[in-house]
Length: 307
Image (cartoon, rainbow, N blue to C red):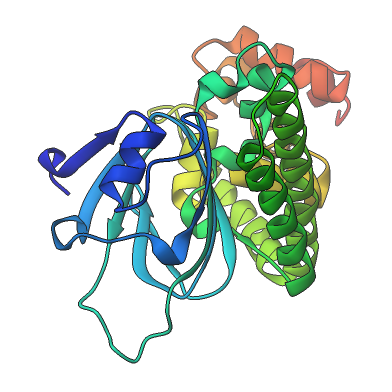
């Protein structure tokens, strides 16, 4: 999609204006009824950059949403999370008169609203703000009711007379929402174990294929490379692996690397330096250090144990 189609929305007030909504009651926080959003024809195929957080709970949205090359149809109730500065794209097909009315909620949070609160520093530690749309959170009816209740509490708080307690109360509600989201994502990893284990199996296959030949010209495989090959985001891959195995993506790479190194040390006459180079290391000292750290033996000591 051409860069000229990217539109930047700097404020929540501007978002309300572009989307045909009344002026927000609070300039830095807003809960929006998604069914009331107006989609202008010229915005049926456009990319956006927003300078605020957006947490969406949507149903029956006849549109394709993208982060980069990833896309997902919002034909089920699910949540997605967009941080300030992320580019996302929307493509809305010609209207189908028989299609159900889109529904749901958007929570818009300007970073300035979080100023001087602990959440200002910790909100980006929630990895789901870096998940792609096709890794959105599917909600059960009970889970959706929990999220909607929190959103209504936030909306009710800024509907009331704004005072010195307003920010603290709303921030605490946002923190509760984010904690529930963490819980529900972990539930999703568990309930979708078949799909998750397929990703884990595919990860092993990708690593096996990568190290099957001399990779000296390619270097060590990175987390970004693995995520792109698996067609998921690096943060989602990391969260999934931690939940399934308790180990990070980098640890999985190192495990496979040590497995291949042991194979080379025990079945070939290549020198340690040659093996290190073959496995993608620029310096054999780095390889030897990693090997010793993982096995408590130097590569030479490991090889000698077979003699």
